[in-house]
Length: 263
Image (cartoon, rainbow, N blue to C red; front, side):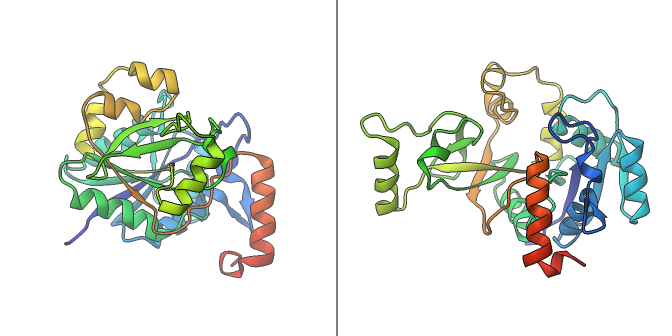
């Protein structure tokens, strides 16, 4: 089937742990340019950076990218996406993929995958991805979000807690059993595809009780009865850059092992 989608990259200058990270240089290119170039390698019709900061606007213009200036009052990246969809007059059925501005190694194939999944599942208004959890410490780590899905690959719930909870066995034993049956618990990967119609509804909904408890924005979608398609990512998705340590590791890795990204 013909697939049409737009990638929007929300980018904020303010960050508690790494202020100004979209403009941090990685081999003489700002991080936001690295993300943009990865997104351009996907099948997206258009790639747009969405920001409220003039320094990021200037950086995107300097490398020839497309940028949309949005309000400084948004409380989430999803709100920023909705404003871009509004400014560009995107049709309600248009698919928008949200690529985080701190993922300079996001595989283009993963962007295509999440857009394709939404296009092929008309009952869903959003789509996202997941990967197997193999370590007990990851399974119990509240910073690693877990997801469980139904037989049609629609999300049942997202949580910071261990999920599904192995009532009668230790985490380690549960994971050993998962290895034997290939029924691993799933870590949520934070890339989303949305139908524009959902974005317009989302910004009208109040914060959901479950969303507030877990501090997980996607629970607002489930709470309001919408469907989120979930599938295992077709490629390993490197984690985003949250800290100076993350950035230092990426710079070192790219310098020594990734000449294709060092150009």
